[in-house]
Image (cartoon, rainbow, N blue to C red; front, side):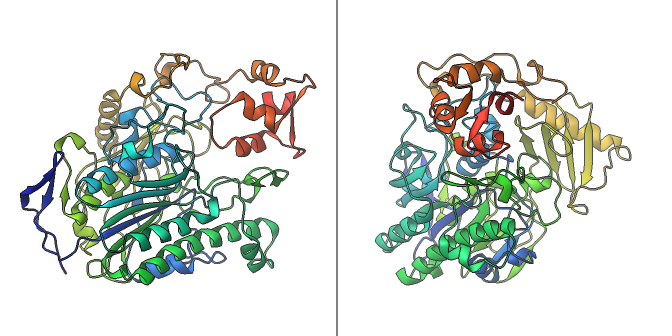
Length: 521
């Protein structure tokens, strides 16, 4: 196996960065494919009996399947912040999705344009950089541009700048690969699948016509996502750069939960009724700090480095480790001000069973419900994972290396471990911002409630902040017909994301309109 030297070359320093003394004739290209709501069990190579993912399976057969990979939040925006910056998203106050109707005073309107990013550091060292697909780290009129985060090219949705068709993400990436095959490049390929609204292609629907309705839609969506991966892999082969390209496939969080039986066809796509993704036996789903919400696929192919067809079930690989590991692969040392929370796990990518040395922390401020969405904080240290409420009056302790399903609560048997990990989690939480950075707030936006999240007024029966939907209904019902249309709902929440999917969750009878009772209750 080959390794990169970590000797700093002063002549290669640029903008606070240092290139390592290159031991390879050409630095590797890096392709980071990030799926959306794609569960750990939604891969045929992870044991799914009805979903087929031949292109992702091909990656696994040619590389390493990291089976203990964790994202750092169970919803889109903060998960992506961690993968982008190498820092816990809570460092930026980003603890739920941008567009949340009651996000908390710590939540800004966008990711700081000066945040560390792999794209910025690799660009400074000579890489051509691009981002195609979902962004969801801010999309306000005064949002930083994609170039501010270090990207030479971009086409996105839920983000600033030129927009991209959902089924063309792989094609955009393929054209970028062909255009830059003679120089090192870094490209994010952030897929739509399998997020709602579901909008499968006719070809994929035809392929799965023999399945029942729910499975047919979801299988078609997964096929479309896998086909996008195939476009990228084919482009690397066609350009002749596959052997010198590090490819990583992962997902931003666990699978969405299925909606009501009436939540079916919607204008512009299908609703959450078809969200039947699988966790592979892990507890919890999207929005949960249990493993089903935060353990996602992570498959790495790097010819000449990553041994083909092996499974790594030892390394606790996390999303904040991606930035330092990508930089190490490219021979770049991030500047001190990157102040990352991750570890350089380049040895793991080279096939070694590396043990992560730093603890892992989570904070999620979104859905708060039984049975698996109640934890607010979590910490993993070695074999142990602790989940807890803000006040630590409710905790669960799991030996995660032996109990991936988190089925046995060992808190009563190991009080000293609970005490140690509780202190670690609370000490970490105390370091986090409780108020948003004013530089990352859209001009003219009302000031948020400044009470700490855990002390804000809540509906105790529901266990979460209770919005005043009755007043919103009156304001948004502009024609005073006592129902809300999708257009009225969108007009009431300008600039926010996933509005069609959110509208569909309220529309319990599936008639395309919201009665006062549906919306308020």
